Length: 124
Image (tube, rainbow, N blue to C red):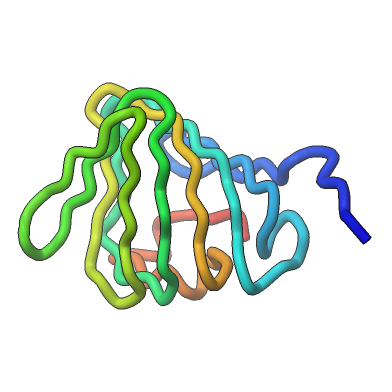
């Protein structure tokens, strides 16, 4: 039977970014996939990470930079990026961004492996 998600779980993180998770660990208890709408202000950044999940990020407005071992990808509105489990990456925004992230398996703080994780909240 279809399941209505009446509202996302709101997960604030440092630097003013807001995560609106519609499906996943925090919102629906799903561990197989997560879908979240992200709003990140200009100048937002997070620590480098080596997540244990694949992530598809679709930029709706603004842009994000994805730093990786071979350089930086600048992903603009209307574009997407796929990062694979085990890749060392770091997300930042210059101008701010609104985007959708789909993680397989679902995003969970224990799977992110961020540098200095003790100082960074995931709300999960």
